[in-house]
Amino acid sequence: MDAQEIKALKALMEYEASRTTPPASFPALPDLPGGRYTDPEFMALERAHIWRKSWLLAAHIDELPEPGCFLLWEQADQPVVIVHSETGQINAFYNTCSHRGAPVVTEPSGKKLRLTCRYHGWTYNHDGELLSVRDPEDFKDLDFSCRSLSSVRCEQFGNLIFVNFDPDAPTLLDWLGPIADEWAEFRFDQCRLAARHQFTLNCNWKIAMEANTEVYHVKSIHPSTVAPILDDRRNVNTLYPNGHHRMVAPRPTGTVSTLEQQRSDLPEIASVGEIARTCTQSYGLFPNWVSPLSAFAIPPLLFWPKGIDQCVLETWTFAPDWGEQPAPDLWTEDQGARLAQVLREDTEFGAWIQKSVNSYGFKGVPLSYQEARIYYWHQSADALIGQDNIPKSLQVPPVITDAWIYPNDPRRAEL
Image (cartoon, rainbow, N blue to C red; front, side):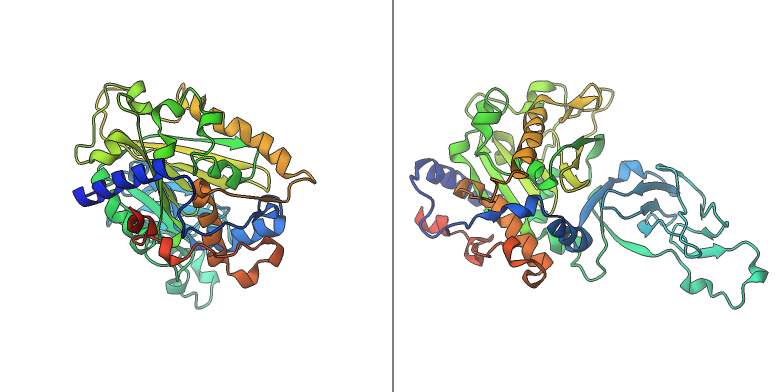
């Protein structure tokens, strides 16, 4: 982040602290329909469009360090095997043999010279090509060239591996847009995988995710954990193309980040700039990634649906090489035995929220200017699903216009 952008962000922080109303040109936000958290029809639309058309974080290169290493990935309700090929390429395929649909991998991870279906022995290389079949004399004119494993789009951002089920989706870099440039200082190409865990939560996945995309709740839910190290009145929200968003809130003078409090022995990412060192800087990547970024760690939280009123929270920590020290883990205690306190504060309340949204009294969600990132996520979701595919009672009007999408920002003209 260059000096001009840092100066602009600091000015916006003071603008936010001094305002007494939302910016004059910011639109009034209609209520979000309550059914978006409880209606199976909307969940089916999410599965058919959002999870099928978005780039999803699936793995880190440390989980596939050598040719032949593979990883079974099923978080998006599709059976996918990710494999490191002999050429160094990371490939992804549906874990579906082209003979009778049996899986070619049944272990969660490992290393194999070939991918071989246990059902009838059909064998594939790491590029998905069919190499051999059992009893070939019993097949007439079997064309191996059209019997390869069905591929899934797979691209990397640094050491992170993403998949996308839509052959017509933009490239990963186009999907990230300007965020890819902003993330250059964090050296995703050098980060190691320090921790990865998952937990089942008793609420809709959006309820859990949205608790991490606004600071309006911080004083109530995190009075002793987050509130002392985050100046919520100086929080600056930025909306990006494709549904992504960012918050930047300064830390009060003399306070340090949560990870700095926990681990004074951690190495730093030397290239990280002033904002990440003095502020809480958190990004939301559409559809399900939320992550603060600092000079010490890149710790994404991923939220996956497990039913209309249940979800999986996946916690990751990426960090510079920690040498002989214990690997850092920002989000859990006792090596994944339980969530860290700050996440327990968020997630334990989610189950109570789910009970409330299932009540006859829940009609919709009136959002404040501080919660604009939540509305923008829903507006972006409808754009990807297609308004014509959504029942009118569940639609979100697209009231946030391009005037508020990066690099545009009417607040800068008001400074």
